[in-house]
Length: 288
Image (cartoon, rainbow, N blue to C red):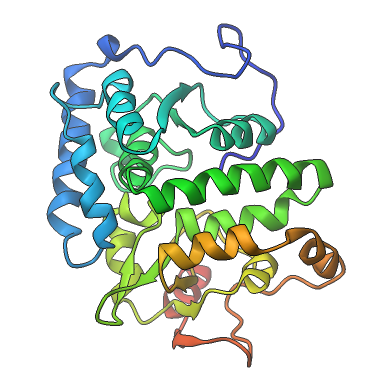
């Protein structure tokens, strides 16, 4: 989630958007997109939510390499009324929420270098577009993202963005979903755009995999520097949207105002546990 207090750079519009400048991408940058796309597209079937695979075709552009946002937005607009707009990097919360509330998804316009192939701290165009856009072609998830933006505007006015940002992190970025055979699938953009975490999130014994519950997520810390120690599992996108639309978040914010944060690796007696993780990966990294 974009989360920052920063000044608007020169050359940006009032809403912080910039020109993608598709014609300025180099052959090497287009080749990087193609490499990443091919690698993930081959690995994800059987591991990712079917809705993501259904939406993946929206990224198969008529031009090679990095998608042209004009063409991509035309396709998305026909599917769900969304569009993709370029921004210079991290943007303020109120701007981010306003874009989502108006069915605009913001994306950086740079792509990682070969040295950043498997990890970079600031999300690039591959994370933003490959990770997020296929599900925006799904009407249910598209409505969820808009509902989140509207909720974010309310949270910003109430000074409780941190709590709501955890919901975004553990769903939009790093969410799991129950498959048709009650197996687990990935759908969060931070997972599906990462080769390593696409494997880790489902296969590794280290992380906890727990049932989705709004209050639980809002109290739970997360990490931004490595693979997650917790993943939360939704039953369906329909249920995620229903809970978002039917929940009055005001009383939840008031209820959680004095509630202590839950440490990342903690499992509560009330949790629905899919996997009681060993946390071996995180502990080994901490000890290194």
